[in-house]
Image (cartoon, helix red, strand yellow):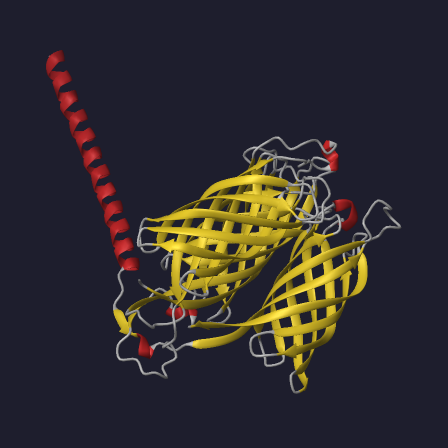
Length: 538
């Protein structure tokens, strides 16, 4: 009887287990089907004729300016009397006489190497006579270097002057005021700038992630323009300092013997088949206490190219500093390397180089690897199939609550951030973000993050959608306890569509340092601007 009862129990158990397994199989099949269907739905497009795609054109410009800044030698007699600030600004016209944009500053002369800032620009530009124009603008931002001079990091920079415009460049002279208004640096001086016009062709964001073909386009069609080749690259670099390379005063200017591990991003734009211009930025994540970063501009050349391999040489000029002995900041960076293409759009890159301060002691041999993504944008010539690429550019005020510091009490940190979202499809997107402190007695603290996000479908009359983001990157400076600099930040938020192009965004998350003690709640609010560029499928 016992044996019979046990057999019945075994049968019942088997049926229950079998039923559970079958339900699990059904669940997994459903999930797989959902994933397949989702991927199929976001990756499959019906092709339209590009002649039916409405386009827009913006006459933007890139401005480089130089401001000599008088230093507060009455406060600290050891300072060099003048710091040279180099500014990079991207300007977008709002009206024929009104423009806005974003800009960065970095120190290149004096003894403030490592001072970096990020801010927003608003200005007016109106004709006086022939090629002579009146130009006035104000720049507000945050950032800094040595915190005892800049305190919170917030600063304002109004400028007023005149410019001389030509078709390919503009030259300007201005009277400038630089004011780190919670710190010691306050200066009036005459500044100079050169401005290079550029053109951005795009369509509405609602047209993003669609496929098109070019068929019998007229010579006057908006999209019948040359395709511009560009490259976006994530870099992992390793610096081997030598010579008289030294740490900062907090470390008694000890020699730098450690390998410096830096994470960077580079953008390249081709001006011919073999020649390109580039900009790249790096931030340290191992080797020194977090806070070292650099920014470079330069030109590159391919002496040899095939379908699978590219050799390249590059020469960059820029600025670097933070956690090293006081220097002017100006750097040079020649390098050479090879690209190995794994597809028409992707390549693995490796390089070696020489990293040298122009007016300082920092120098290092460098080597590294990177992943390159090739884009072909803005036109249709010599191509037949295309995709509209969705891009969102956001400006945010970020608040971090109860931030731990190594050299002062806990603070609430205020930061100005610029974020770029690059849509993979209508659901997933890649993220890049840079932010600098302007409040919380942490001037000089900065973050560089990258990651991936997920959009929900629109709801509430097609106005609202949710998003989930996960980012990782490097951060440091101003005594914020990020360890060697690696940070992770998950966030969840909402965006409300004000117009087809402009959305109001808010989110909440957590900033975590796996190798430090910082765990801070994060609240963000800002605006994002959406557009879609035309990308050729090569």
